[in-house]
Length: 190
Image 1 (cartoon, rainbow, N blue to C red):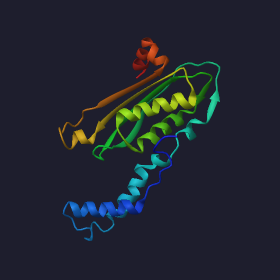
Image 2: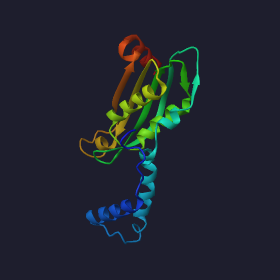
Image 3: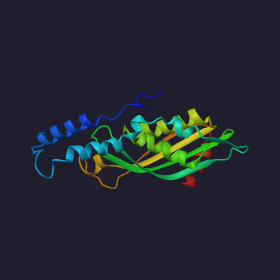
Image 4: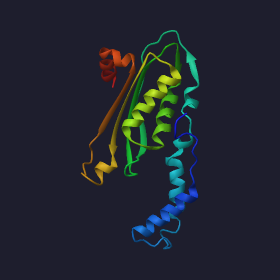
């Protein structure tokens, strides 16, 4: 079981923290435009961090038996996450491929897996590996390859202020590690 699974969002603590944050930046939490802000932020965080309470094994449990284990690829899966370093968004696309070993999962389950890991405080590098490891664990394929490409708001709106820059992370497992031609095939399919 992962360290983040089954943790519940405490909306009251979030409301208190937002009120303190507003006071900390010199705002008056009781002014008309801000009175409901702590509650709005608490509801938003409940949605943004819903992956904290979700177990990735659930969507990956619904599998189908197959005879032919040809390459399966799902690309351009949109995701939105929150960077744990600055609590700012990063967002982009996930691309996943795996070589089945007798069973496949519904294509929507790949997108759900991405969503579960994206809906946590994250770093892109960890998230890429988590997706690959979950597929290896629950599908037992011959191999997996995951590529995430994302724009990070901590690079865009603060710090170096470089909008449009993308971070690309790659995780390879099993047959994809051993076979460069398979990796090349993945990138051609992108």
